[in-house]
Length: 196
Image (cartoon, rainbow, N blue to C red; front, side, top):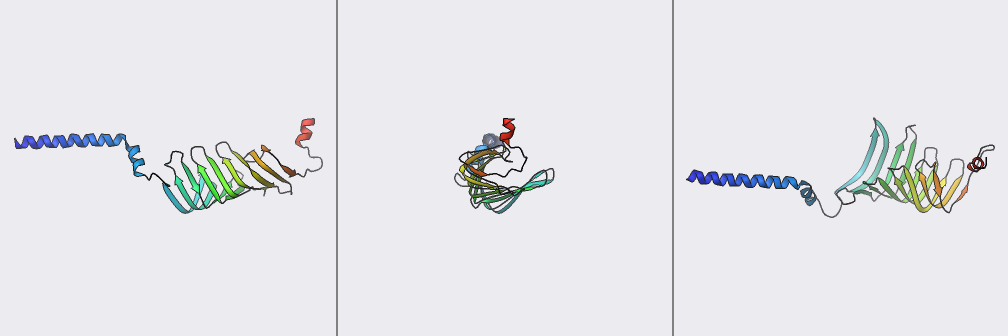
């Protein structure tokens, strides 16, 4: 009789343990979120150097003194409150460089919000300066609604109040701009091509 009671108790404990195990397995994501802090970043980093490689070649290097990672928030993002310094290496091995005093990367949309003293220097020394620049990595597009200045290697410039452009600046639309462009003698402009 005593052995029967012990077996009944052991079977009851085993059944309870199995029930508990399966109940927890179904809610593992909720348990993970519960264990995370509800407010604040999931991770912090200092003195970060990130390298993006493709086929063994370094395509970009990001440096930042401080990063906050909000990857468990509803709309995940990484914040760089002390700015970023990024060097991009093209297929032609030419380097483009961008800096800003503040940046935010939205993971779901691949949109980068660069703010405060944004400076982009292309490999041909074309320089763009603005107070805010958005970079849509998914569509290879950059845009701003803030005042900007672009200085070209030949001394030409373009100042305006916002623009939309492909990231290589070949498709460039701006508003409220002033510019000074140098054209070599005999070189056709877009206006000449349209009038032909």
